[in-house]
Image (cartoon, rainbow, N blue to C red; front, side):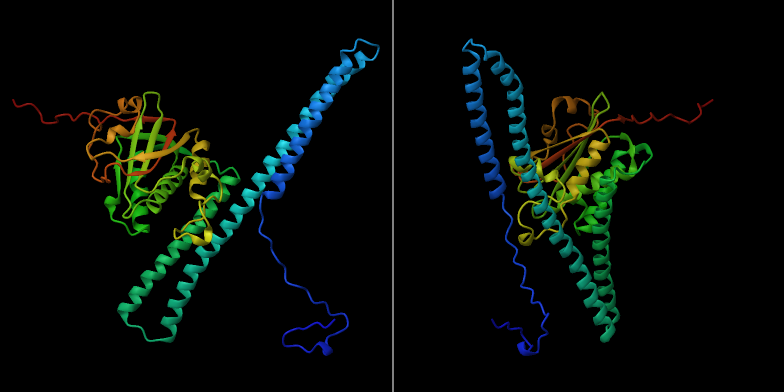
Length: 376
């Protein structure tokens, strides 16, 4: 048999030359593990049914061996149930392992794209400035573009570092009393700058609420929530943040966007690690699938809870319809039923994520005292 190698003469190949054929990757599917798992479950169920029927029939014959059959029934039935549980666990773990492998593959694709695009842009502008005479105006423009690419890389690296910190259990951050309105305003302003959106893209309705929590975790939590809302919002995106504090000290922050919404059967999955809905090679939104994963883990680490649902935008004077009656009653009278300055079309459906954190309180403003001395 003749071996043909491009650019080489077969006659000149050494005797110990080994030609390695290219590796063909077959697409991974769940068909084999699911089929095997279902077949094993059916066989175990049939075996259990036949064995129990035969054992019961031998035990009710009232002869000298009936006692042995009762012992076999008592000892064998739990073992067969354990085997059935093991097969079901095998099938469940196989499905989870397959899904994790697929998410990791999507994560590698997204990170590769997120790294390659800004690096290629930086390389192009640096080569242009090195090899050609560029005017001062063009240099300023190039510097701004390169700064945006560097910030994009910095944001990606921060995401990866935050995810690694969550995986390790995080560090012992010191908790302090934080002004929720200040944190939300800072995160919203940063998100608008990153996505080149006007400041009115994000509207905030928050009374004087203070939360006792580490500032690093709180900023990561709300930064990712607002980023996600702007990224997957409508065109143009509209985001509304509303905070309420209950009498028990639970603070609920609702993040409402005007996007297309998330199907009910996928709402739990979006909080998983590396999860991004759809195919990684067909999406136009930047990201790594770690934002909502960080949100979920930080919320649970702070002893809170998170809920996701459809977000129905109301008319501009009906913002209080978005919350429960118990939450609305916790708002001070001066902040309830405030008209929104960021309305979306009535009836549009987006996504609303409610994050509830403990250890909150409303600080009432101190009454002003008249320091003018009385007239004599």
